[in-house]
Image (tube, rainbow, N blue to C red; front, side, top):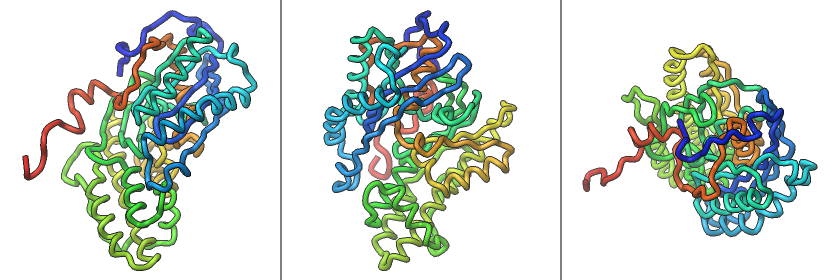
Length: 376
């Protein structure tokens, strides 16, 4: 993807610097996060600090994230979280080369908080600003724990997103497949809620599934007749939620949880298998990176690792701390952009939606406008 419309290219000191130190800010959902990352000229990233304030307790009573509560918490926490990140890095603002902040996609009220704070720091300290796509942060997150060369195949799987992408570098990604309805993480959370597991649902369902036997339940498999790499989890979510209402014992719930986890892992594996076969026809460097919050699920990691091995791909997932939302990935994405001389105007807007591959999203939107179904 070429983000020339969103970023101005400036022949800044970044292109000549031996290394860059960037403050990253992340407020797209229910974590207020700040991090300082140093990126060397040869692409080695070092996380100097990473502070994440979780709002789980604030939203637990509602069984999900309440946007207004999330935005208010970001306002209250962003200054303190950033101060702590700078203190843990042992740096003052004069040691920074730039500021990176999530500008979308996400809950726009929260996005505005982090982006506005980042703009304030950039203006006060005369630093370049990088308005970063949250998904691009996930795309580069594996580079926080290892030396990862471009290009690679990425499965981005989280609460709000499920995509397969060919990643050639920041600002240069092609979408191979995406969810046409719900994301895998959303299915985890909604089914967990139906089982009465509370919030956040994904980790709770994984824990319960460890004692279950999913062979008891026959769950639907989506898009079997299609030869593309798209995903669909709405049918699974609906079917499992209905079965949850009939669960009478804790063992019933555990068995259903295991069936759900295996069904989601199977679909992710099937679509990734197709994408790897397509990718292998064009690239000799064969690496599957799995990023996003759902990448923390051990069953899904193991299933995808086996699929990668079958296709002759190396497998890599970020360290657990960088699978879920964090600011280190935003700082790294910003540093890589700054290294190229790509900076954002101070009037960069917060965006609730922001596809990584805008060309593919415009040419073949996953969610087409207009009414659907029998009433259409």
